[in-house]
Image 1 (cartoon, rainbow, N blue to C red):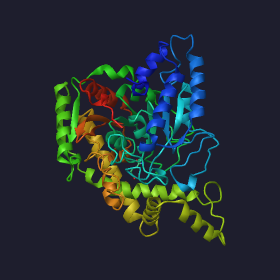
Image 2 (tube, helix red, strand yellow; image 1 turned 90 degrees about the horizontal axis):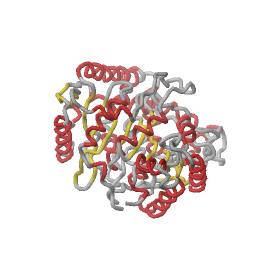
Image 3 (cartoon, rainbow, N blue to C red; image 1 turned 135 degrees about the horizontal axis):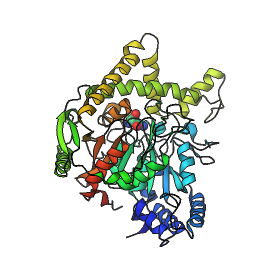
Length: 486
Ligand code: GLN
């Protein structure tokens, strides 16, 4: 087995026992990136010098110690290019920010630095996180490590592809409507979107502020728990961050499933779902019963309205958030303009790609006088109904189990001409963002050699429970140990 194939916790154990060094691990990962990056294209920016310097520092920290400061110390990882990194270009895969170098770190980055993490680079994504396939990157699409003709999912597709191909032991992504969970499912990884308010959004470039959360992409549930532990927790810089204690996620993994009541909302087994994917999911549900959980069907009557509600609320917030890219303060600025209005038009016309423009127009329309009540306000009311479906379900069930996606990874180019078809990839993931609840996707099988994801949804701040359910399933299966051959 090659070093880059290890999980984060395996690598961390070897570091603790002084059997390998962080420098060796980092060189192995950088070598792997060099070997596969031309095919996978997971990264926008690579930071090999920084990584080796951080590895060197980690080795100094680890030397002569029985316990590393953190399980993340000395472990190479990747960051989605929407998370601000001081002194390292942060592009959001947009021409608008192609040369933007943030003057500060996001809080999650600060926490990772403090834990001794090693940063290998910034990962590719859909422009400003708008998309489900990473094909909306202004630079190039990322390729699914499992199949050269398939998308890795989006918008955190680069983060998923980097971990799945051995270019990072884990990665951070962001999830506004499914952008951590969908790529996790398409690339055979564990992907967790925490509760809204669990992880600081400070230093995260805003897409839709009431929905955005930073999440983890990892090779297994243990790794996911270890990474979440470091990034979770109150941050006074983010007014929506919640000041509630962070449990010991790793210690909580062992509880098992016996006696747990899990709901299965049939609304998530949508029309148009690939029958083979549905079959794989049914088997996963059977496995959960076998392991001692009690599964029962539950009604979530407003699920079907989540897609229209999301595609009003998210673009509305995006249209406001993206107003700041005016060519005056920072980012791309068109210098050939004749007057101020012309400068705005040119800057925004050239700086944004087609999907971002579509969202700005949708959002501006939904918020405009005369339409606000009919669209935006209505969508907010629907959002409340969706939240109430969950409140109701969590009275009877500790968690819900559903598909992450109705299909396996689709072909590159398949949906680029049809925005609505692309939006439909998120039907199973949007609800968690609208309700603000945590959700995890874990590998549960394959269809035609492509990974399938099982999604577990829980009440606010039940990340520990989600990880426990996921861990019990994972320990009874081997899907998470499969690696793509590139
Ligand atoms: N695919 C969804 C969108 O395009 C979700 C993206 C995300 O979670 N960032 O809005």
